Image (cartoon, rainbow, N blue to C red; front, side, top):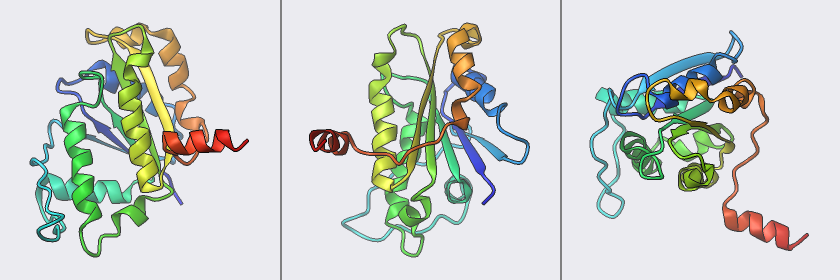
Length: 200
């Protein structure tokens, strides 16, 4: 199967550090790998409405919801490029993931089965030198992938605040060169990893 990367940028400013780092990593993909880039801030989704106890969700037939659903279903690799906002995902990205809840409950869509075995990746820029502050963002993506039965390639972290700062982060740029080349394992919830360690 031809690999098709969907890059979803979630910054509220154009050409931010996170997108710059994601593009450096994407530059390393071979020419036969399809790339599609969608800016979530410029293709906003409506606020998610949870209907699970009232009625079925319906497959979107127009607008940004249809665009993002179709792009998600077509991708073999989904890259969430979200800057670290208040130690977690940006609002456009969180709203996109909220819509996964509706797509999971859309009759005939088989959203979870379709995404199972595909790969979720993350890219983020943060202003802290201490990368541990990004753990909530990493956990959100890992656990989402685990719930969906997806692989998780981890999160490429870079340091930067002002636009262009991340391009001076030589360690992040070095990691970007091989980030998408790594083998992504199936995601596991933290308690699954703990149980596995306890049985060894």
